[in-house]
Length: 213
Ligand SMILES: C[S@@+](CC[C@H](N)C(=O)[O-])C[C@H]1O[C@@H](n2cnc3c(N)ncnc32)[C@H](O)[C@@H]1O
Image 1 (cartoon, rainbow, N blue to C red):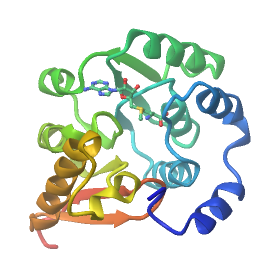
Image 2: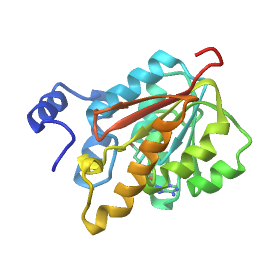
Image 3: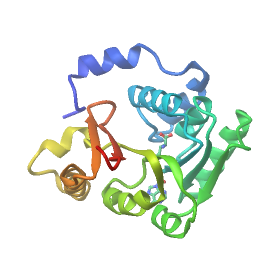
Image 4: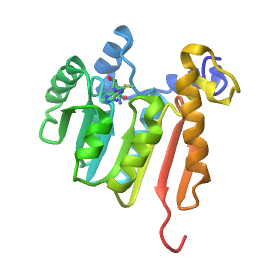
């Protein structure tokens, strides 16, 4: 299985266009096999931050800074983004400087869980795009850091469509099982509003219900 929806539909949506200003980073990512958010998922991400107007964004998983730069271009937020690989952090910072966004985007070299345990800050929007088998852990640590009315957006939750299978190939099994458990968990919680979208590789929107919802 290649994707989570009909490949022709996916191709059509991808061809409708990305972000011309970010084409250089998109091309670099493709040639160098750096995983960045897919084009249709990037559109949703940009739309979400433009509409929500968050003041503070936390991103888990920077890679070369593509999605952090995108979120900065489509909002006025200050962004903290977490990356554990030094070479990724260096490339992200170079890309961020090339957009003159270094005052608004801080790349932190850390394991996501260590950062989430230590930080005293809170955020309006949290974008999860790091280790897929750790989403439950990231979520449990992130929720107390989410401001009232805030949103968590998780990427790759349908994992190339593999989460719909009862069994997965050995190399994908941990990610698939952990993602299935995570999806069932968030859907079982009555205090959360969740929306699972078959966009990109599967995107999950989560917010805490208000008291009267
Ligand atoms: C899918 S890429 C992020 C792509 C980026 N959000 C974008 O769309 O431009 C995931 C990144 O998370 C980093 N990562 C994976 N597990 C991590 C962890 N436990 N802590 C910190 N970074 C992690 C990887 O090194 C990788 O660069």
